[in-house]
Each structure stands twice: as C-alpha cells, then as structure tokens.
Image (cartoon, rainbow, N blue to C red):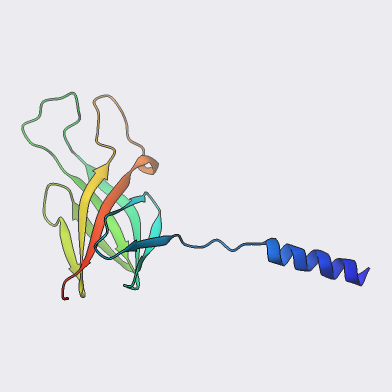
Amino acid sequence: MKCLTFITLTLFIIGFKCPTEPIGPELGEEFSLEYGQSVKIQNAGLRIKFKSVVSDSRCPIGLECFVAGNAQVIIQVSDMDITLNTNQEPKEVDFFIYTIRLIDVEPYPVVDEIIELKDYNVKLIITRKFH
C-alpha cells in the first residue's frame, strides 16, 4: 500500500507543472502584451506588464474628428509604473540604461463599439540606450 501511495504521489508531482512566465522578446524586438499579461525581456532582467488603460480618446473609425486623440496606458516595469501615450508625450521613457517606447495600442476604436479592458493590447519595443 505504501508503495502504491509513493508511486501515485511521485506521478502526481512529475505531472504537475508550475505556471511559468512566457519567454519574452529580446532587446530591440517589437512585441505585444495583452491587458494584464507580463513578460521578462531576455538579456535585460526587466519584467514588463501591461497594467492599465488610463484613457482612450482616439478618434473612432467612422467619425471625422479635428484631433487624432490619444490612448494613455500604464506599463509596469519591474515594480515601477510608467505612463505612455500614442499621440502625446511621453511616447517613450528612459528606464536606467533602457528606452521603453509605445508603438501602438490596439484595437483602434470604431464608432458605436465599446472596447473592454480585457480586449486591449499594447505594442512595445525596448532598446538599450548605450551600446
């Protein structure tokens, strides 16, 4: 009986997989994050998380606007919150020896359609400031 319990327990432990963070992009490589998702940047020791959408005032497809509007998001870098924008400053920030730049926020608004927070994703690129 003890042998059967030991085998069952061993198989359970071997079969059990701990959740792991996905292997992230390398420096200089554009990447996307879904809302709430985080990745670790290879060879940089940075953990990036798409934390929040502060506002999205971009002119929806189907309307004519006088201004393009702006999407503002919060990205968590290691344990620090950074605010980035699509059409206002800052579009990029320096974080120690790295530059973190917002490329895009998706999806783009469409007239009479509501974008839920869970549907957003951001495109980012992180580069080293000094070579």
